[in-house]
Image (cartoon, rainbow, N blue to C red; front, side, top):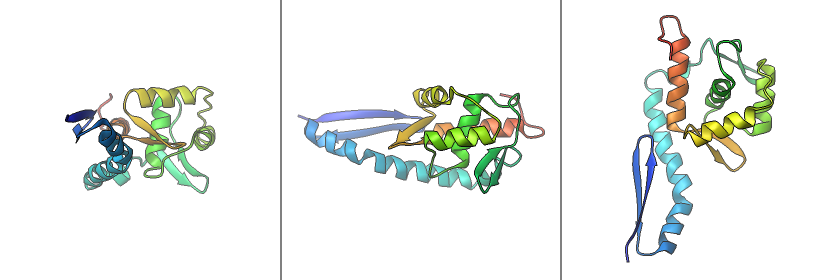
Length: 156
């Protein structure tokens, strides 16, 4: 009996096939490693178009970590969370560290955990162990928002 599992990602479908459910389960265990390889390949392509400068004017890197330089009226709490996750690529952030960086940025938000859950539910972020990272779709979303905030950018 052939078993096939299709995972829908923002950049296309990923199919896993095997001769049994046990074989599929073994392949799923390897999937986070493959997902990282795929995301890295896509991120590498993105960096060729100036990804490194995308957060200039929005985030300042300090000895304490990345700090948002825009006011709360320019970014929602959800956008602030995603922007800090973007700034911490590729290592991501633990919730406690994210809370600290939001506070340093003037985004005191007791509900930031809910914003993380929203980003995760929408396919913009994922959890790896106790660390949160952006998906490729999440990175694209932050880049679009960042570009719209630059002079001459289009609002989203």
